[in-house]
Image (cartoon, rainbow, N blue to C red; front, side, top):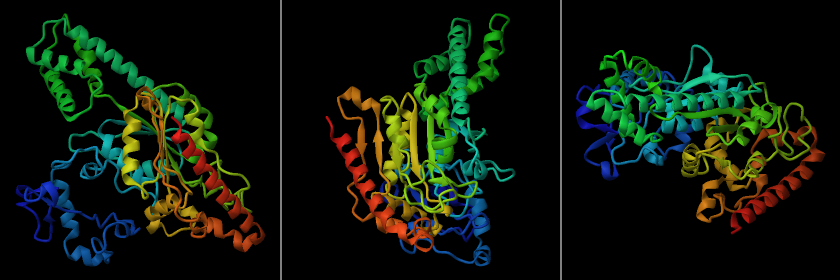
Amino acid sequence: LIKEEDLKDAPASFNVIDAIGKEKGEYKYKIQVYIEDCQSCRVCVNECPKSALEMKPIEEEREAGETENAYFFDSLPNDVLGSYSEFNLKGSQFKQPLLEFSGACAGCGETPYVKMVTQLFGDRMIIANATGCSSIWGGTFPTIPYCKNKDGHGPAWANSLFEDNAEYGFGMRLAVEANRKQLKYNVEKLLEKDISADLKEALKFSLENWDKTEIEHKENAARIKKLLSETKPTKENAAIVNKIKELQNYFIPKSVWAFGGDGWAYDIGYGGLDHVLASGKNINILVMYTEVYSNTGGQASKASPLGAVAKFAEAGKETIKKDLGMMAMSYGYIYVASISMGANKVQALKAIREAEAYDGPSLIVAYAPCINHGIDMGMSQKEEKKAVDTGYWLLYRYNPELKAEGKNPLILDSREPKLPVKDFLEGEKRYTALERTFPDKVEGFREKFAEYVQERYQQYKKMAEQE
């Protein structure tokens, strides 16, 4: 969204349209394509309404002024939301993504989830990233895709080993808690001293709203920083003031996340992940679920499904995949969600918001189509929808807080499968490859898979219907 007055210096080639809805008349609307960074995956063209976007030769668009348009677009105010909340689907997408132009494969299913998380919480995020695809596209110098907003705030990102990422993120969570505890103690001590009325008012407001993160609280934190920079410490309060200055970035709670793939979460790092989830601490874990070790060439993991062809499972995987969500729900105090953005964007956003808001451990398992699946990656979002429509993937949210309201904590967001699962399996080369190599096994695998899909859906449905 762009205000009319911000367009006075726009290039002649910078085309906009009138915003619709409540914003009509006050705002203009623009989608800016960064042609020099486009990977030509075609996902946006396939997802947007017909004729909204189209593929064009880059030379043609350069001549049309799109490179200059991108520079001007960057100069415009960010996060103009109009009447929308920053936490609903439409409003969140008017916010600046703090992940941009990654080194992922064209059409990657992982990056849209991380982009959405950064739009919601990126200005206060701390990320522990397991080694794997997401650490390669997320942190290979010099193409670091994580960025900061115009206030200089953005995700703090670091990469651990493959096997200890959950513990790494857990350490970050404990460090944040220790630093905030120290900060709060010193703020309370400073309020006992002789300080300016403005600083006292701002510090009191912060203590009264210690765990809040809305815009007014961020503005108050910025005000405290400014007042502290103008405060001349006395002999009596110098140590306290200096400590508060050292910890001033913790006035707003940090959103701590651990990112990784299923090779980490289901296999090599599972012991640590289980330990961290069991701790009860407020850490958010996002598993980008590609069903193979994507970064190392597509080896089978415990998340690989029955009958899928992968390295170390060339004749098709003989066993069903591990149900990490069900295992985590057995604790009873872990927020758990299974999402697929292309199938239901609102459900994905709701799950991410609820997970972050939950004062305890949360686990989100996000279905992410991968080039190793043998599909047209320009259709990755549609593949996510097909996975849910056929029952191949379930959408659900398990929120322990609902127990206190006398409600069932499990909400099954998936409807009964409306298409046979074989429609999904027949569209991916990791399943159809068996038709050439082990044709005698194909029918048996597909029959077992169809039975598994029905049994799993009925199991979750029964759990969600319990009073």
